[in-house]
Length: 266
Image (cartoon, rainbow, N blue to C red):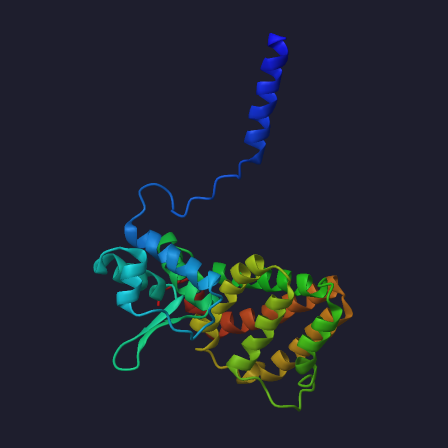
């Protein structure tokens, strides 16, 4: 009889425990983080929770101080941290304010170049990394199961396939690589791999004479686009490798002294 009561009590305790909800994840960073770091994280979480887009305004400083209950110095340090990362834009003066920024590989790349400079990494290493990352993204794009999306995204680049057509300006040429990265189907991989290309664009492609490359770039983009549309991952990877190799070799011959230099922070 006593054992039956004990078992009944144990069953009741087990049932109560099973009904408890799991503890909510802590909304702080690791121990030792500054208040400004935690506030920066909370601001980003709120941006995501409210589904704000690039250009949307954040509340005024007074409202943010009330919401996060921190000092003005901690709030401003948090905002400055996010501004440096390109995640927000602070516009001074009448009609200004704090706006949500756009997630861009170049913003992350600017911070990354500082680490690369301290590491002693060279432009030669950056170019090798760019070649490998672009080839990988082309292969992933060709394997994207949403074939309708792939064909629609790549179609505009087929129109410029003939050497007699107009050439790409830098922005248009980079758009091709951006679209390929988006088709890769993994936002983490795309963002990380695309960062190498963003740094190359800012430090190299914007400084060299591209006139001799224009026809080749247009032709290469069209060839890669056709392979991606066809779903031929092996060919897409090969063609993208050859395309980036052409650009890399042009830079190495155009500016050979810079190849071995340490990557600069800008």
